[in-house]
Length: 263
Length: 250
Image (cartoon, rainbow over the protein chains, first blue to last red):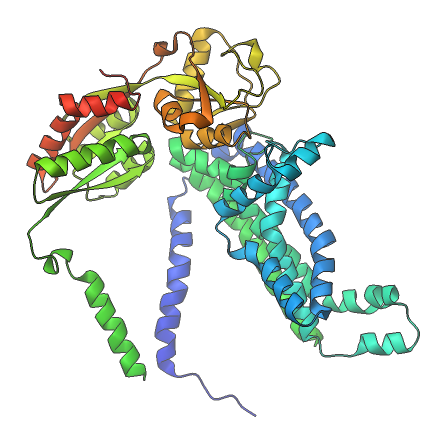
């Protein structure tokens, strides 16, 4: 069966949409002062921010996998009202304005909050630490992993897990040998999306963790600060962020194609 | 169906583009004032009193960081008046021929130390009592941060902040919520925080003063009104509003 061709007029709004998304990003490359670029990027401030971003995003992505993956698997298997409630809660931080996410974390885990006080009795003081950055990033990026993995698990049509269980495999063996390998492309693309979201995290970090070079000032915070004094530095750092984000989104597209081919 | 949608879209576009004056019967002039974020409360009050004495005039404000406003003016933003929270920003605006005439100095601001109500970390001033506490300041590069660095150097104190914020209001928020033990902010911010914070004056804080300047934007369509607004800021009534909010007068 051949799918009918799209109406030709559709190309006009589609073209406008593509330009609308591409022009601002390309324009930024036009504003970069290429001659000064190496000098702008090897400052201690920029390198500290980049290194801190990479470290915290790696940590938050690991946390997303360790906690978000089990949540996605449970949600994919749950039916009824509680499943809906769980799904809404799991997706909510994705659409919250970052400042609201930061305030929510402050109210829950701040030094004056009940949970924050219990933590400090245990000797854990999150305020103004790198750990607070990781908490903020995990909070806003975990939904991306949960939503994408849950969707993939739910739409999986094959009954390999049932077959394996019938053949005597324990639930853990089914999970390890069948469910996880089949969901691997979705997990990989979800993890890449989470990493990308954590990399761009700004508002929650600023509100909850603060901003100190090498400790809490990640790449987006450094860009925001640089903009106040030197636009060239801000644009140079933005280009780095853009390149990293492109690589991550491209990775999710590649994993998506692997998933399509596996079907 | 598609035709209806297109028609609706076209109509709403037209409606959005139509000048607002077409719908409001009495002729009114809008004066657009771009002012530094720290002027939000005082300029809103000044605008109210200006509207009262100039019937038919509405004053519209855009409150942002001074450097953000300067960026917008450079891009051709349609402002009539520009008020900056420091001299370097106003100097840049003048150098770029964005201001007509000489801007007027209308207020000054000094730094102070604030702590959460009850002073949980028992801080006594910009001294050894800050050791090991969570001190938050503005980052170097933004006006309040530059002032903090300069003052600390003049007083011979080394500050070890746990966070350097981009906006003075972020420093305030962190002290108000008790997340930080102390913060260095402008006197006007300390006053605006009210009973949520306690103010600990810094000895010799007036060694470093931030100058607030206001000027008429070149090419303003209402330059006469804009000049009158600038005059109202430096008038006795305007100066009273500013000093009540904690600003120093020039």
